[in-house]
Image 1 (cartoon, one colour):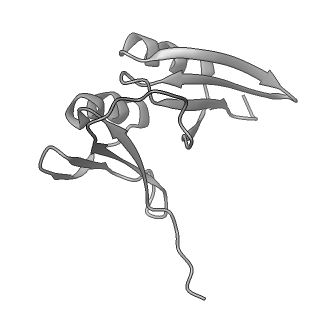
Image 2: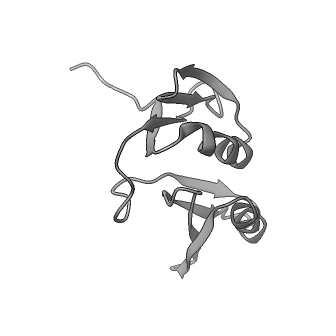
Length: 120
């Protein structure tokens, strides 16, 4: 059986151009490709890593994401502060079973988790 691998996690949004600067700053990524105003793909963190892409959709976000990215961070408070200072929001703080993470949202309300590295 042929195997597949994830190369992009696509985020639906109203305005990819509005979200790209936020996500590029958060991930330290650049723009890899744009297809009109409907699709923007960011660079992957490594040659075998998963990149983020944005797809313009007409409907707005209504409920919690069914899929969301988890981002490992060395400085949970610092990255959370960056998110909120750049148009995002803190949704929840979690500390369970020795793991710490914050649920945050980008400027259009798409959730993601910032996960504290275990060594920090």
